[in-house]
Length: 154
Image 1: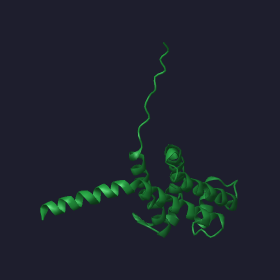
Image 2: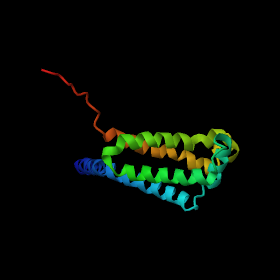
Image 3: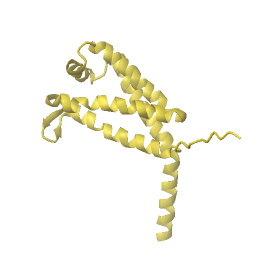
Image 4: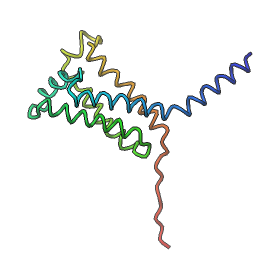
């Protein structure tokens, strides 16, 4: 029985290792593309939160303009996750996106926190981005490190 459990465990882990990269990329595509599309068509529940954040950080941009372009950025992030050769680029864009989306936790505490360490629904929505970071780290771990190329001249 122990051999069976070990063999089963190994097969499960090996199969998950095989599907992890594509599953993670597709999951990130779905989340970013979908949420970005909702912003573009004006149905995002995050619209008022973004508008409140803009008033504090970039008051010279209208919320409608920003949300529209931010939606396109999110859709672009989603598509780029489907292209493995662009992983480094999309991770860099993702980091910038995640930094901006974390802003309300610090700049709008009245909207994102009920009390100390008790987030509102909006706060929970932002904090769940830790899962996106973890998934992106898994994708990064699958990349091959760049190697220095020597350009020796004979």
